[in-house]
Length: 202
Length: 98
Image 1 (cartoon, rainbow over the protein chains, first blue to last red):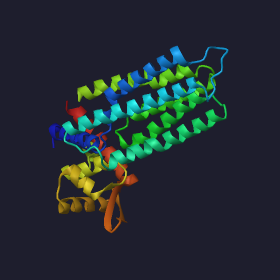
Image 2 (image 1 turned 90 degrees about the horizontal axis):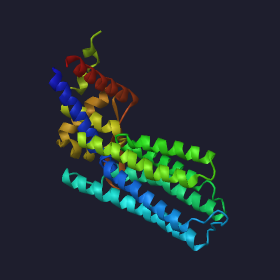
Image 3 (image 1 turned 180 degrees about the horizontal axis):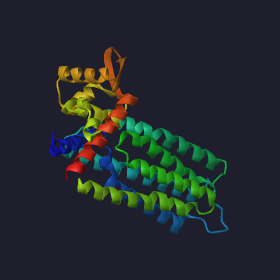
Image 4 (image 1 turned 60 degrees about the vertical axis):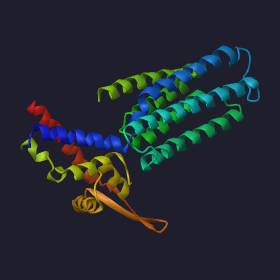
């Protein structure tokens, strides 16, 4: 038994862990892109759609529907980007994309996510607009933490940060938009960049 | 007490090391998935899972999906602790020899 054998063992452990829970490869570039989509969407909403100070945003107004549309578009685009980048990488490494791990990861992600989405819609419907950004951050964070069991575990920290951000956001009413951009935009880009360089090193 | 004491002999094998690594990050992995990841034969995998089960490092859960029997493996608390200790020992040994 020498150092070479130990190193070999360690690299085998790492290899098996990452191959059996591949979604780490999703994170880098797709994280950055998701952040960019979020910021672009927020910028469009801010410039054209958000009501001025003495106006009220009501659920049946066109602007509200457009904002909702942008939100859905950002979410779908991020998901599709993540999916296609991961599939491409999996193909390159000769791995199957749709297996037990993927299925569980998605179920674990979407259960809190969809719960949160429906809850927010119910709240909006009864004119409780105030905590929307906070709730979105918290539920998204919980979804990430929940899904991170099926990855090597760095996504977890993104999840925790989103939860903390969501809680802080709840303390400062009126700054929801800012926190939303910080969480879904900046945090994704920061996290994606860190992951991207980490992946390069391996 | 030397560091070498923390190296677990049971994990000193490519397939057993692989099984433990996979179960460390996945809960409830079935037999075929392990086979596919480790690229081994049925008999070979079965003998190694049995060894790990005997040491109470992994637990086995049998069920049926339709009419097909399905066996799922996951780590026991003991197994998790043992494997973490093993990884820490490996890392320490590498550090010391450099």
